[in-house]
Image (cartoon, rainbow, N blue to C red):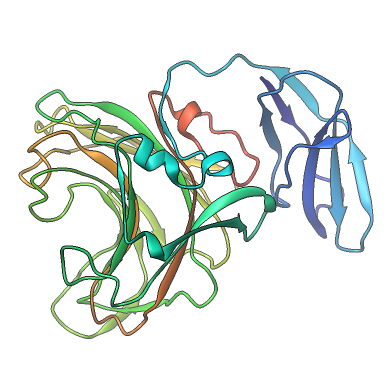
Length: 314
């Protein structure tokens, strides 16, 4: 594998995109803040083409570093380009309300990447009165005092028009680790939480433990890597987040906690992506995009790369 790194075009203002190429073939199209790209192909002649806002291009030679395949193994890969969403069933997982889900070209990067578009109406319920559609991996994450340790990687994007104001008594879940007996809320889920039993409005706040994303920019990808140790013991269990909003990876400190509770301690857990929200938000239908869903035994293997910036936690 080759890791390419380049400096910003001068002046940096006015850059629309960067396209790293191998032997003249475009590998991907990245945003204006991108400064690196990992190429599994790993050999050839590389250059990077910057497209400027005035319609011209600038071609430069990146620094190329040879890198071995990251250690560890991939436990699940959504692999949308080759199979749509079939990887979930092949893994022993499931999709709830599949009519809500389509595989489309990336709304930011275009046809170079396939992503999942989830649109949920208030009538799209499943087992609860609350609307949802979700994609679940197989139940392979062991629980107990010394359960599974893994990295979950994925990207999400909130499109233009996604509501910024939510009632205190309404919530949305975008991702979580969960399992039987499904008795209450997951001890570790990404979303906007219920705050109080009243209709006062507050600004959307996407959070999980100490990962505080707030009200993300609409139409922009958020890359996430979460390192989790499943355990009923708060001294053993932990969650550790990394995220990238396009300005580079931010690595949050580890947070110790019981990641297995009465809600999910009855058997092996799964990881899911979801558009799952409280009935009566007044905002339906809601749409969320997801990409690059993986589980792995190392962060480098799980990490998404929407912004052309390689995950490398210190």
